[in-house]
Image (cartoon, rainbow, N blue to C red; front, top):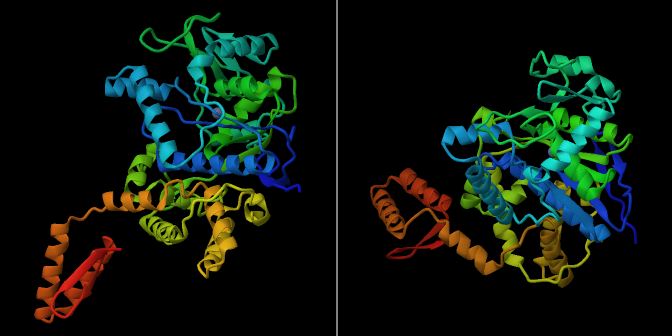
Length: 449
Ligand SMILES: [Zn+2]
């Protein structure tokens, strides 16, 4: 049985049938984090979306070579090191560790490889030399720039020509550049900043170069899928294409470009610069990794996702309900019931399917129960068993027994004084904190929901 997967390709802006270069081994690259600050829920969306695509591709094809990089040399890291008075290594090591813990909480599978930029400087120098030799790049006073005028397809991914791009972006003005849109392949480092010896003096690579180098090294010059957040289309992905296609004299780099939409808060993009971020660790601590994961998959990956308490509370109620039918099952192929996922990774459609399976399974339909459990697992849920889930909830209760008893006492007083509004309010407050109460003849008993 063959299964047709469709994906929206940012290169063509069309939903296309996915045709792998080699169906025995799928190749996928996703841009990973720049490790300078705690990863936030906006970063988590990219992680979870591509992890879900990875799981689906594995189910369809078996073998998937999935590479996700770590950017551990960048101006933002240097800035963070100065600001916090910590060494570059301290910053990158500690943030990488937090990132890995976040991946575990969100139940993201390890990629096949997770290369670091600083471990590929030699290859980046070689690629820069090669681009200069082929006249796609030029050196000026220790800086090396890619010349955008040398690549006629520049702007194809972002669907803009050079003039439009120039008008719409913040450009680093420099007298060293031939065209203001030219971007950095290599730049000099100050003595105290990280740097490596190169034919152009001591310096460090521009950000875009690492993904061209590492994707080629681990996946080949031409590979199947390249993913990342929507904000990477320009300039990052546009520049990756320019570097790789020019260096390889090839029209093809990644065949399918898949981009996920932003996480928003009050309609604004969640980002460090807008100072409206929720870190992954904070969200996971409050709601659990599964609830956060389900929330991130509750909208189609290409659409914006608005982050708020209501969304999280709804997902929490769903996970709580689904755990009633939790069962350990043997992982099996469930592509027959995964049409929604096969259709451009339509996770909300697939979640609706899981609700349907739940409704059949709750009526004691054994087959539906197994399918239901496997469907949850394909989305990366049910990674902890029922007892662990109950334990998480217990540990996570932010209300003490003393406070519960005091609130019950207050409520009984209110009732005695016929202040029923207040009594109802206290009952509701307790419910919101996960405590349900019941009035018996001569006392009130309570339990955690
Ligand atoms: Zn990248």
